[in-house]
Length: 609
Image (cartoon, rainbow, N blue to C red; front, side):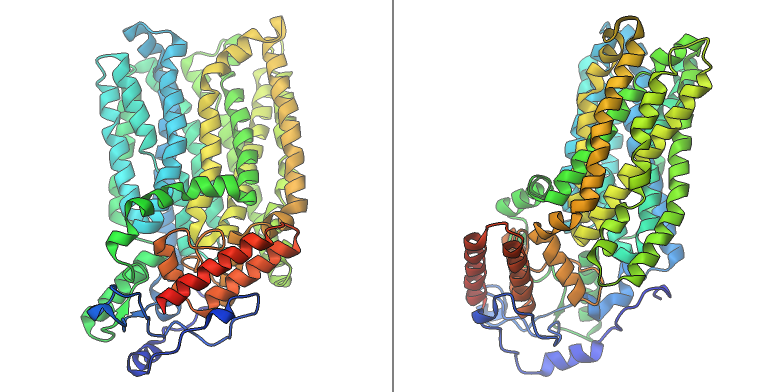
């Protein structure tokens, strides 16, 4: 049963029955490709004319492709609120465990250094390589969750991460630790997949509470590591810092296997179509992925295209690039900032456990930011409802609260810089400013992620992968120089001077927040991909679409996307035409390129006919 706050069309089985007995609907001609709007008539009941060699008898294929309108009641959007939040609670734990793995290792550095005779800096390479490859792992796993489904990909990721804990926990030498940590980082799917599940279950207008919840798990997991690690380092052998990760990861994987169903829309549509065929009600009904042969969906070229999708979005989509760099650099600054904690709090005589507990103020800051976002979200929902035709209200208003919380980053850093000098100052002052930094970190991650999920819908896993990549990669790269940075700069006031440098950099980053809020519509207008998704959503009654009919960048990103696009008829032409005309009107200067791409689409559609 659908939630009461969400409108959706009923399942239209009668139209499907009619489609199976009706004459074939003529295909749209190539002259329809242009900026004109497509007719309002529904097209999801048309028979599909597949390319030669794809259907029975190598001729016309009478298969009918199921669409969201035909099965909306059975998709993730219409899970009960209780079921959605049960799923999200397990995903919360999954995300905590992933980020827990990145930080708990630091408490094993001293033991590793002593046992294997490497320097502390050398032992920290295990943390560095995990974070750097974790960044690439998020990017590599994300698009496969859009092809195979969220559940099998996340299960495989969790299994591999748990397996690669073993060579670290049982390591006979330091090389084994490095190999295990490298493979563990590369095997981590990260937040790009978990955040993609939000787009599977919530429409854009109702996603923010869920995004806020998952973001808290992401940032909170990193802080939980040193809190637990302080106790394990003091009372247990260093290997227990690894065993604890494995125990937690194993428990989370079992919970995910039992309580979390598949949520990816296209996968559910495939299953629903197959179920209806087997029941005999619609023998010619097929899911979107079933319409393309497996060998074409996963050819070498297709695999490469799928893997490159998040990297391509990061480099070519202005929204993804700008927000990811903002989020990444802010997280890198904060990561360097917390590396100073052991140096700072030893001045007050903090032991191993107390140093771990000194991270709790940051966790408190994360919680306060999460709590403060609730009224901000309510305000944003009301604004979008009152201004349905105002694009800035629908998109950039999601960044509104960040305008007030982003300055907490430089304020917290400069305050911490000059309250961390040790006695006679009390340690509580530095802790308060650490909490303020936590508020900023949560707010930046939450607002940028919410904005990108809205702009990129079903491809949010690939889009947010760029955000996660920049955060993890920059944090990993700065792992090694962080300690020398705080010990070798500024002479006697090295802690204060180093933190002041971070303040100066953060001040510049905060300015970027206001520029993005002001120039957001321009960035979206220069993004054909975001514009096509917006048009598809508008034509779909304001609901998300399960995939972009035209493929990536105004042309199919692969043969699989091309096949999907050719089945979409005139609506495909409308999306491309509107996106192309926007590009020209905003002065992008790609008129010839757009026309070339439209000509390619015309040829592909003609071949399909």
